[in-house]
Amino acid sequence: MTVQQDRSLETSTGLRWDDRYAQYLIAMGHLCASAELARLRVEAITAHGDRISGLVAPTRAERRDHLADTGFPRTLQIGDALVALDDVVQLTIHPPPPDGSSPGR
Image (cartoon, rainbow, N blue to C red; front, side):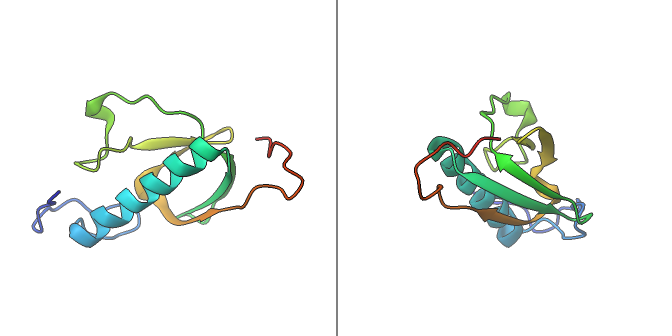
């Protein structure tokens, strides 16, 4: 995948699109997909300082709703909140509960 270096698009975090930023988005997309599959809790911190935690809900986005050429949707549902992938500045995945119980929302 190649993202053009001269894109004028800036993200909500003030970063310009380049290959490194695109790779960051792809890594977050993969992490969320894995967390969804394993039903692991995640916590996202947005550029505005919001902390959103919960399970990643299944996402079925049309191709036009994907973020640039990353192959991942523009928004993810974490718990009850919709989060723009390019607004996330930190993403944490939590291990399953030691007793094997369901993590809930």
